[in-house]
Image (tube, rainbow, N blue to C red; front, side, top):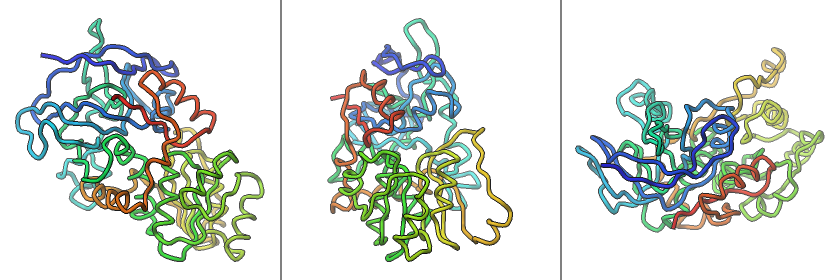
Length: 363
């Protein structure tokens, strides 16, 4: 038995996604089929489509999604038909070294599902699920540990943003960097993840909360989501940040773009002894340079951040509480809502640096 759904398929690197019919097998042991309500369009999806990040093709991309379980395979417990869920694109096995040592977001098997075909085109060609989830489709089949029930009080569609943008941005501030009240925080890059990090910094009591983007059009959105100051990226950025932080630089700088130039900018705007957290996913060939002396003399901490150092089973309810109390505003992060056929335009807006999060709705 199989279910056929409409999906956005990327057939070759750099090619625009095309809407095609994909046949999904019924869920096997330990699997569930989820009918998607919505999917957020993340910059990582664009990077996968363009070949910046590796992806087997043809593939259905999309890893930030929410919907309702409509079928389960043998042995599945905890969710059943009718359960509203958020997709988790790096589900932990709970048995490897990383899982057993408090780092489930680095699970050795978190991306295993992305390496196996999950459906087929009408001509029988095998199709791979982008990051194991394939959310740019009416429905998807994923391992049961790749879904987390949607907490009560969170809209079923906007809950999609919790699956990547919000957990990653909030987690970078809360889990990875541990921003404390009164510390200064600067966020470079105001896409979906950056906007979530901005809100998380405000929630943590950071002061000032400095938003940085190449586009001055992001000023209003950044201010609405908690920034106390907005700066346009440029050659004078480090001096402007120092002027707002007693001449020192930011206690915490978050790079949410994924390029060597913005990583270097985040380093330059942080204070001596400060913290630089790299959240953006960049290209393998894009290298960053530091002198041996400045690493010693500046005494800054430079660290990567994968999935906000989050365990969605633990952290999603915490984030949902902030959503219910109004501390995290999902609706304002969404600047465009489209159908599945609007995905190519969403990708182009990302290339142009326009808007916040685009949400694909399937209802």
